[in-house]
Image 1 (cartoon, rainbow, N blue to C red):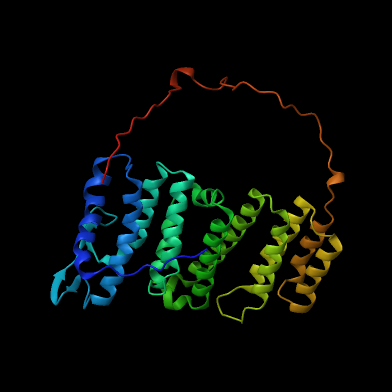
Image 2: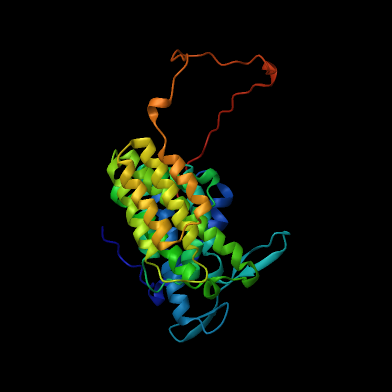
Length: 336
């Protein structure tokens, strides 16, 4: 699947782009509950990053940009956590903008809208001139959607797009882990940030496995884990990449998913585990017992007791019926 790199806007388009961003925040988001002009809403992301690329190349200092030889002041006005007015540089609002636009999109989200959004964000993430800082902000912005619904939506994409979307972000995570001091805004939080990146990798990998499951490609589940184990084991030693943790996680997923779908022979899995424990020595031998215990799983050992598939009426016996309310919301369509 091909993705077109984002290109910086022309000088003549920079100011109109800022006006469009201003209309989004000062008009659309303040006046209307739901924004229904979806193409224009998605385009807010595109014009921001096009403008950001221009700003990066033509900003002599914070809050200023040179357009056709003239210097212009560029400030994004807002408020801090205490409610005090504060001005932001154009470079500083990417995470907030992504989070806000995706939040607004979720109010009318469907697979087609999410498909368009992910194709655009993938293109931005693959654009070399977009800094690591802003790629991080995209990932952080995506993850600010409540209850990790981003991961649920990804599984509803066409399989190739879903896997591309995950792979692009996993790749960025490893780039960051190889040099977190370069990209971390607060060195005092470096260990915490590294832990978050490892957790993000684990969550992306689990999502990739669920994509295979939702598309009935069960064999690809085990193949994906084997490929990840190979890639992780071949990573050169880095201070902040915890190979032990990643391999432990992957081997756990290997055993659990094979128990679920019974794809690989147990003696083959045992050989795989032995290889990582005895030869590569990434896995703590005390922890390895859990893998071998998992291999002893046998679905024939499970017994089902009494169960029913009949419909059951809701039980309101512990509820105050006078306090139960039905809420009906009406929204006004708005064309920004």
